Length: 429
Image 1 (tube, one colour):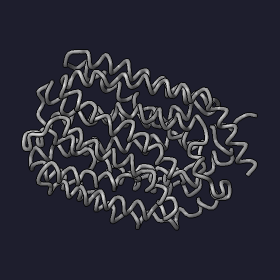
Image 2 (cartoon, one colour; image 1 turned 135 degrees about the vertical axis):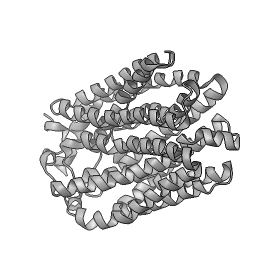
Image 3 (tube, helix red, strand yellow; image 1 turned 60 degrees about the horizontal axis):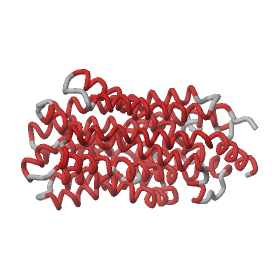
Image 4 (cartoon, one colour; image 1 turned 30 degrees about the vertical axis):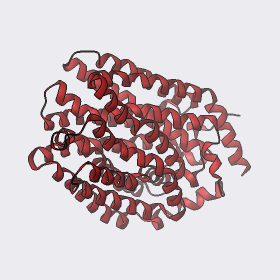
């Protein structure tokens, strides 16, 4: 049996635009802006590490914990909250999430000690827990299936761009007005966006999409979230690879401050350039996967493997070079290709799970990304930095790419067969 062109299931979904093209991009735009706020609130902390270290005499392990607790909360709560959002209403859920993380970020600005800041950061994670998964499900629901890797890469690149704005903007604000003002600024931006969102995007306006999806996938069971080896490998491979991004996002500003002697603001701006490189990698590498994989499903996985291996080579060389321009260039290139696995992993999850539970499916992907990558990345590097120094800790990071490459290679062996089985089940239904 031949697969439909573009790995779509079924083929009729491949080219159909569920809503008007203009409104689809409006939905993408405003949901993307809230994702920016999500990551601005999350990553502003990394820009003020030096301030907190000086003012409160915190260790690197404590700083890493303040960063990692958000990802840990996201990882633990993403699945149950996304499941509730799929059933209660995705748009209403997104608005409540955004208001919670914005208020919690304001709480960070008011923290009096490490314990208070830790609790506020945990609440930031609670608010952000399901936004990436539910927001991605909303966005994918208004675009055709043939664009899944592209839209996934473009949307999730908002996490990197938001990180850039959080790190660079937070660094500049903290430099001139103090670290508390940096948190307050991010909180204000998030609350304003949240108040506008429900007036632009509503369940009623995207409702025509739901009946079409439900008719093809009546009452999908949650076991279909892990119904194939390929989708399990997609979750695991993505999560392991994200360890690299989580570690570098948290520690590059401090590395530039300590190794290159940059000021806090300078280090934040340079780190922001690296994060933009990751954002570009998500979007461009995702688009390449859609183009290359239109006639060959396994080609997407081959590209994901190539991205992992290229990231390993580039970063392994970079962190063994002395400080200088060549090192900075290689770090930027490594982050570009390393982020390229986001698009193909998201497309695999969308292709291998029923549309009505896509929010929960992407929550499972988010769970893997956070528990395997974003949460342990900053913490592991912080612990290693306390023991061996920050440079030695960062030299460890690239080896994680080899593990993710192996997992994607396992997925490649089963992907085509699993797609065929999904297509047969859809046709029978």
